[in-house]
Image (cartoon, rainbow, N blue to C red; front, side, top):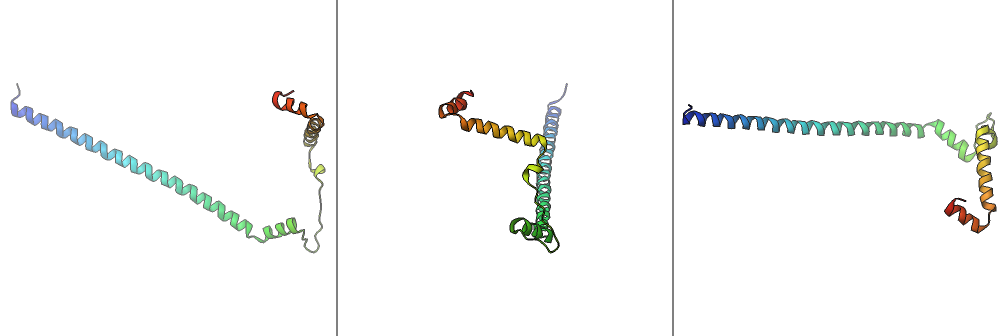
Length: 128
């Protein structure tokens, strides 16, 4: 049988082992939290740098002579010497399916406008 001194030494060794395991676990958890914190901020830093690059690209575009020329032509109608203005009507820029959808929408709108007021309310509330 174990003596009383041996039991006390074993109990102290067990407590010490428990303390060591607990302290190692706590330090590993702290390391995990710090690494997670660093990763989150690195991700935010990357997103901010991408946004900054995008804004710098927009700044370069808006300050370019080509953009100023485009705005002058669009808003002020200015034309450089030797240039010809070509105006494309809206109806020619639509495909057949887009024109068909537009005509259907106009017919539906006209149908609704032609209805008396009480029928408009019935259509609104009950879908008749």
